[in-house]
Image 1: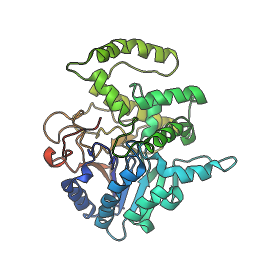
Image 2: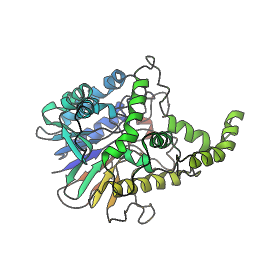
Image 3: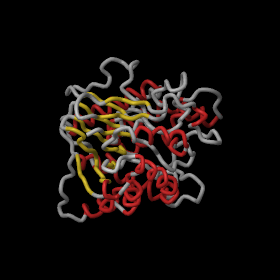
Image 4: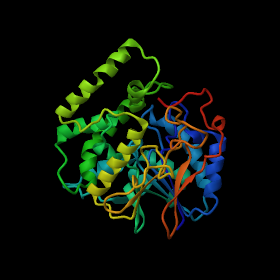
Length: 374
């Protein structure tokens, strides 16, 4: 089965940085789907549910997903995998599961229909083709040797003090430290699902046309602490206090956290954390595909061995479909954060990274008002 995996579309993001709003990006992806794809996997963060009420994201997403569904062959399958920004797609399934006493342990691949997942997922399934669409969580096996998951569980193991990493650390203090050795999806959900539920609830109460207060928190903090140029006095004070705050967080058991906020460390820390999550979950696969970090890989110029795990698995990152200029540098299409990443998986051979928008000029992808993601 010929599979194409894409993630981090973030349809409905308040800044309009989701490139599939642009005609050119949609045409490129639809053209790829029409060229022999038997299964499309939307590997998390298909919707942006943190920037405002779900209805606003759905209004953007449904026409786009409808076009993608039409571009697929009549017999093609679609698998929708919720991520951290659209974790609410699971609300109905999680609620029913919580009523079981005791609930059945969550496996590495749970499958159900969009209607079983939630009314919101059912609407997406209708746009994509309800009869051929399934929901999988926290991931799915594409082949006996290839596993795919959004990758948000890595936030529990991260060393960069992002908002999500700090929230996961605080939640860990409430529910208890991670047990040593092998972990289950339920161990991760106990630390992350309450955070996602709270953020989603606050986003639903955002004023029409205004981004929720929780929108883009990690990006805002990163730009404040790591960005160059002139800063206001209060920002300079925060930067000066950052090492002390980090020491206090590590002392309080929120860490381990590091003060290095460079682009290289963001990349390395993300991969290290995914290696940790893969090992702790016992994902016995030759290849593990994930998204979440928005950093496409593996690329030719990456450090040798950085994408390899101690168990011998090879990691692959799908990248993203956002035009995020604060991470992009260098010639057009060269940045690891340039949008349009995808991973193709055939019946045999290793997964192949495809950079579908690499030749599309930036002016055809950026938001009309030149806004970028916070």
